Image (cartoon, rainbow, N blue to C red):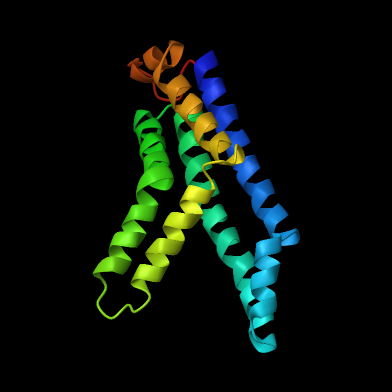
Length: 172
């Protein structure tokens, strides 16, 4: 396996590990803002809301971990060229397009009464992370991983057409 592909794989693993640790951290140690919001809720809704605040990020993180590691593994260990392209596309969807897709859906759904409040809240939460250096860590590592998968010795490794005899293993 070429060195650039190894860099791609290990950076992908680092991104997934960071997501997992941060999701667990926020589940165990909620922010002061979240605790203040929970305190304003009626008592019967607090526990259900807290469970949802743990469950939904855990489900989303699990989904993106599976997609990211699955595609990275297929690209790095099974030498699938399409997997590195899908990895780059998944990053673009996750990092840029997903928020806009959800916002567009909510805007187009008739009868959604809190549309403006939701879009304003989504914009404010997005803008509030611009000053947090941690919000740049995952995208930066992912961009470096994608660059490693498409440059240097990885480029030739993915495009090489090797013929493999039945019963033998391909060279790395």
